[in-house]
Image (cartoon, rainbow, N blue to C red; front, side, top):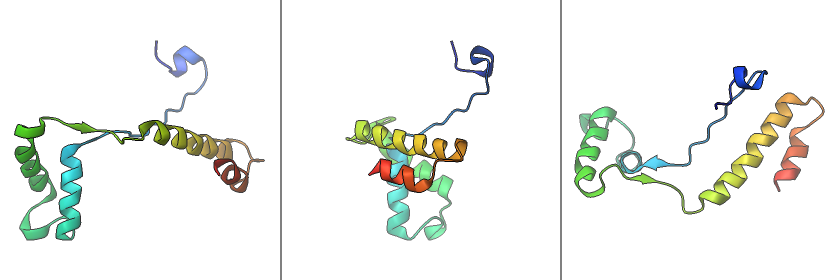
Length: 103
């Protein structure tokens, strides 16, 4: 059963936080840092991404990477999202209060 306005009977807001990234993106971004950004040597970002994918695929296939401390990341981001929602939805909650809570 989904968490939808129909199943809950109230409006529903979904918040997604990416916790994984594919190896191609990591290498692509690293190359951008090394070469000074996209468009270096006349290669478009999609062409560069495709080239990285062709090189990595035989070795890594479709490798997905997650941070070693993913549990800590989720715990921290949960507090950030909850604090932002509290500030947005409750006029009496201030950013300073939320910041103190995050410390």
